Length: 324
Image (cartoon, rainbow, N blue to C red; front, top):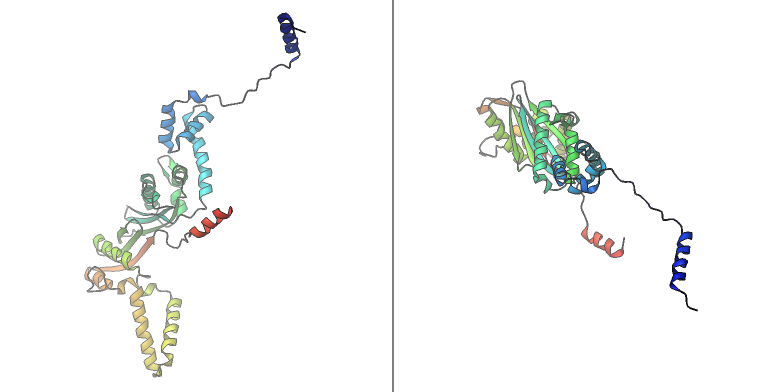
């Protein structure tokens, strides 16, 4: 039985009459369409924040093209990233130094890799922290980080830098010396070891020369008076035990112990060490010849005391091979 064309048309019309009505789904989206975000605006936001291009584009879309609101949005995102990265070990970095009104400060600023330690943004941040810390004085890092520079606190700047660079960045410690008419010399070796030497009398050049000696020899104390009494007694007990079985009279043993104790102090105290630049006199003699006396020193080395994570390559390969 053949069906006429007219019957086919009627059949199709009847079927469509009983078909369910089409339903359109509309996805909610920010009012600013992607195409309406100008490339120039994205570039300007990237230059202002240092965030990635895609993050800047998303920030502008989410905030209807409002650049200021987009910056706040990126900062909030950056804060979350900084918090997440804060648990990662940051044992690289640099020492920054600054002086303000007769006071000098050393600041240790850490990052995760030596590559970032050479980054211009990281270097600029370290210098800004040192200058602010010199104005604050003391050794309170939190107080220094609350200082405002270019409209943001240093802590806010640090968090934004974490978001930009992608590494954990920390201001670990600061040391301040100077004031009250004392003379301070500073020396930074390869950006990784920083030293300040504080003198009564003398010159800044002299103090800087002694700071170079401290960087090289790493003495534990400035003078014998700075050595804790308990440390002296401990060393004396060790030395006494070493010579106790010598069979010598007690008075000779006592002289032997005191002689060795003096030698020990000469090794660990700055003023008793042989001055490395000339090797012909002690640091104390050098100061005496130049009308100066030692007040103290501070020495800071990048990553000192931080336990670095040691990756075991063989274990990593084994885990990958085992699907762990």
